[in-house]
Amino acid sequence: MSSQKKKKKNHNKNAGRPERKSAPAVNTEGGAANAGDVENKSVEAGNKKEPAKPVKEPEDKEKKQAKEPDKKETEPVEKPAESEAEASVENETKEKAPKEEKKLRGAKKAVIIIAIVLFTILMLLMSAYFLLKEYINRRYLDRINYESTAESFSINENIPTETPSEGVTISEKDNIDEVQKGLIEADAKTFFNSGESAEANYVTNILLIGSDVRPGKEWNGNSDAMILISINNKTKKIIMTSFMRDMYVYIPIVDNCGKLNSAHAYGGSELLCQTITGAFKIKIDKYVRVEFYGLMDIIDAAGGVDMYVTPEELPVLNQYITDMCKESGTGMVPDGYYLGEAGNLHLNGMQAVAYARIRYVGNSDFERTNRQRKVLSRLIDNCKKMSFSQITRVADVAVTKVSTNMSQGEIWDIINDAMKYIGYEVVTQRVPFDGTFTSDYIDYQQVILPDYVKNVEMMLDGIYGE
Image (tube, rainbow, N blue to C red; front, side):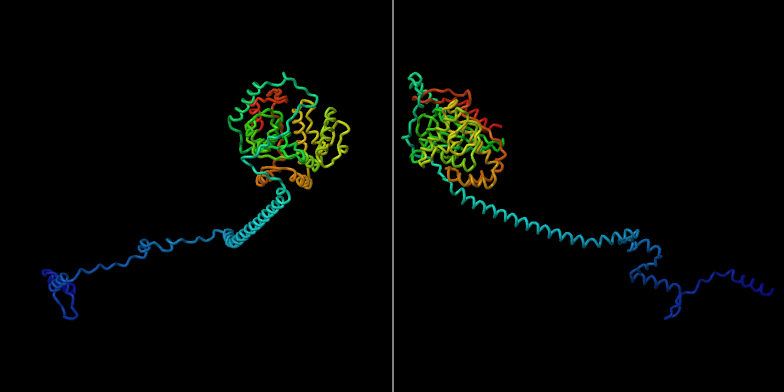
């Protein structure tokens, strides 16, 4: 009771007094200071010093992880293999890489080796080609009689004059008069000097000339065989065009008209080429010429040709054999060459040339040119079937019997394409064509008067046409 009373008394005593504030902070160096002094000093210190930097409170670990992404998350993380199969495939790929590199290096080496081998083979083939070419040049081409293409050449005015055939009498009324002759010659010269001659880079024209020059005679001889060989690389054809010897044409240089075959007698192969070029408007500047006796040797080297000889042709053929043996000047005896019967016969060189020269059987020179084309066609067919040794035997003989104005380079161009030409179709034609000419007598000689316009059109179509 007494203690409760004392507490009540103390409470009553403090009730009227103001509440005492807490004691000021004690300065350890200078002792206690009152509250006012402390506040004043704090203000003065604040005016003199920079405000204190706020002290960063330590962030929670979770907040720090949220602000700074984990470095492990930003860096690419190699995913573990999903399965053992994928891991094994990856290991196999790594193991195969060196093997693939080895294979690649091996392939490169193989390519280099193949290239070296091919280059070596190419060089050997080229060497063989040049050696073969040199061999062919020495053995064959160097033995050909090459004639230069001269812009001017001498004219032989003293050529033999043809006479009417034995037993043929030409009356004055059959012979054309001078006025008509002058008109015919004027037309021929006008046509010769008009227009240009046709040519094309896909056609090669070579004139084959068979001259009847006799051994020991100092003249060019008439060109009794004139066959133009046209190689058309577009149509894959070889066109053989025969020109009839009795066509009455204008002959340049001589500046006169005459039979076509006489152009060769006047000025040789060059003048003949110029005459055909102007008269029939086809560019001819290459020729190969062979005399009849040379052609005999070539046909013999080729083994002869098969021909059908009619009973009418037989005696005339034998007569030509007699004449050729006599004119050869070598003492040839005709008895060993005579044919005893007509029919399908195998002819040697002498007999084949005599057959090709037959003129007075059938339709005169028309059938004669046909026989010439037959002999040449059979000869070409035989050569297509020959072995290499047979071809070389024919070539050995032929090169010494021909003359040409072609260069060795031009001959090589033909040789290089020879295998291609074997597959070409061989066709024949004749100038003048049927229905494009008339026949008459001029200076008591039978001549053919061609229609130049029609013949040129038909001939060029056969050679250059599609």
